[in-house]
Amino acid sequence: MQFRNIIKLNRLEQFCLPFIIGFGVYGLWWIFSDELSKMWPLLIAYFFPPFGKETIIPLGIGILDKGLTVPFLNIYVEPLNINPISMVLSVAFIDIIVALFLVWNYDLAKKIPLIGKFIIKIEDKGNYVEEKYGWIKPLRFIGIILFVMIPFQGSGGLVAFIVGRLIGMKPWNTFFAISIGAVVGCFLIAMFSKAFLIFAEINTKLTLALIAIIAFIIVMYVIIKNIISNKK
Image (cartoon, rainbow, N blue to C red; front, side, top):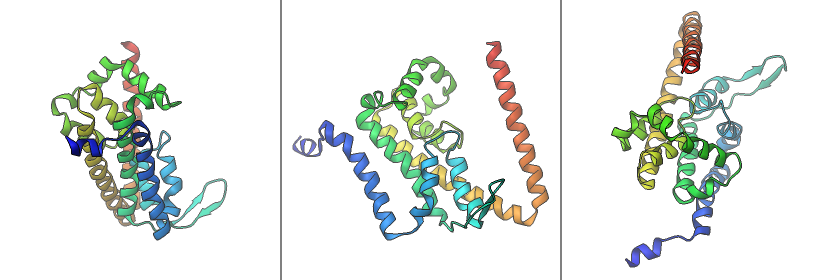
């Protein structure tokens, strides 16, 4: 009982600690390595749709790794030369810190502009969320891990924590599931991205054809999904 009292945090500490940990880790990283100074625009972009781990990581370790000329603006972006592991951990750490903040400050997060409205909007659609992510509920801990691992838009730490709460998971269990899913998912995306780039260098034409096919399938999926939704 005494031990529990020692580690118990008050409201101010619960609010501040995730920021202290986040800025502390990234601050030390910035001081002792030049990689974070190259990655920070990508990490900031991660907070804004439509960017997700499935776009930020390939950009950091792939496309921008060899330099890039911005179309129309004729601006050349020098190669970032980012270690793939650094890119993976830096993106995964964002989801981990977001989940940690929500463990202690979920109700408070509802009062934060934009984020609060987003949380309330998802909670109000509780039945829809349970139907859409129904496969997660029977799996629970494993389900949240898989949800975060899958590189689809909206599968980050914030949405995963809300879904975990809606299906009745304990906050700390949801936090650890998100942490595992974020790290494993980011590593898988990085490995796939590197393999794809190696293949692209070997056979560029076939790579472009595959990209075109994948893009066509995604567009058709979105169109069909919207048609079905409108009929309902």
